[in-house]
Amino acid sequence: MIKISKIFTQHPKSNGETYFEHMRCAAYYGFRMVISGLAAIVHSILPFIFETAASDCAKMVNKEVERRKLQSIDK
Image 1 (cartoon, rainbow, N blue to C red):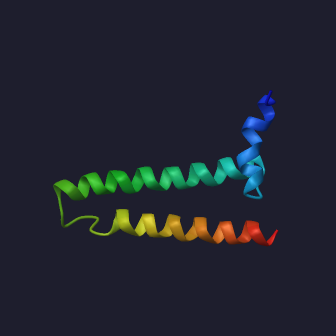
Image 2: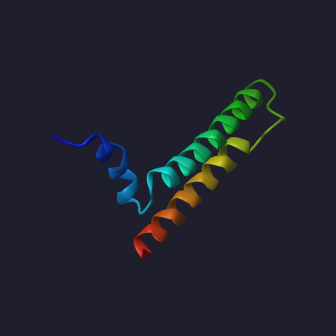
Image 3: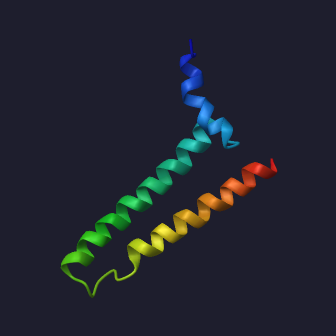
């Protein structure tokens, strides 16, 4: 039987993070993606606004996640 605490810490630990470090980063990425999603909705109606906001955010999040992955391997 899996301990409840392990359910919450197994994934963060496999990425070299504590539960709260992982929560902070995941919440930050989620917030950024929600904001860029809203910008994409505005862009769908007004195509001259936020022309690259969603793709720029996706690139930034991907780059940051890859950097953090490499950083956790080095630990």
